[in-house]
Image 1 (cartoon, rainbow, N blue to C red):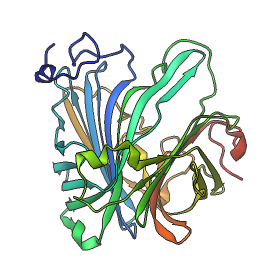
Image 2 (image 1 turned 90 degrees about the horizontal axis):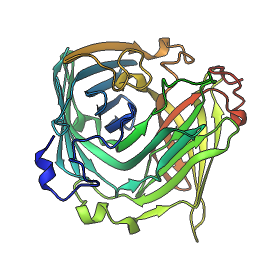
Image 3 (image 1 turned 30 degrees about the vertical axis):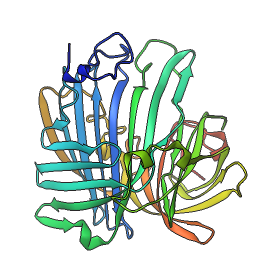
Length: 373
């Protein structure tokens, strides 16, 4: 299968670009974006992914407003052209790679939006995520993260929300690709599921910081990374500026101390320490005050999980009453908390994403979904 992009010198092998690099069902290529105002009155997120070996492209757009999360989901068959980033009523346009993207939702069961993202930081290329269990590849992927600001509007059941009326609407975006869940469903002995994940993109006055940690049940990390980058104004970036690796100060070590909300696997607070060569450690405190459920954009969702086959095209919308959820429901434990943050004299906001399944000795978790004491 030949694609017009095969006319560009981008090949990594002798195969055409549309030929999957692996036969793993976990092969994927995904966009993720979030946005929020400083008061947490509005939070939104979009995920869009393609799964070449499943022949699926799906997208989801979700909004938190007034304590309710509204989730719009779309899925379609994607047999060949993965460059067509339109899934039903949800579309994504890369208007300027690494600098500006546009998201449009065209009347998805009462939800519409026209949003433009402009970056305010260089690209952080996170170290490769590679994890094997008994020799089997469970994860092998790359992620890049950037910090952003948003403009545009959202319409929710007739209420038009102009982002400019909310003050500065910030957020982050990531792109990841490779294999996730590559061994899922393969035969073998039954084991207790275990996954510990903390991801904390942080927007401070004049700078941005990032922390990402995966740990085994013992607390030993199999991925641990951190970085600090400059922060500039929306629209002030250039491709040379955002791709300049000299502008990314990478951590020599990252550590976190997490306090948990009793009866949950959600953080009540976190302190992160980012240590860098020939610099004083950067210590950041996180205080959650608003919540976004990641199942709304496909993560851990039993019916609308990423890459699930839904036919030629299917769309749906549902709502979550956030204060009525059971925090130990398997579909609910994966969250992004909006946090107030402080680091010395600097203040700001952050997204603290957590997914904690199974035992984790440092946190006192021994079962699959037991809550904190």
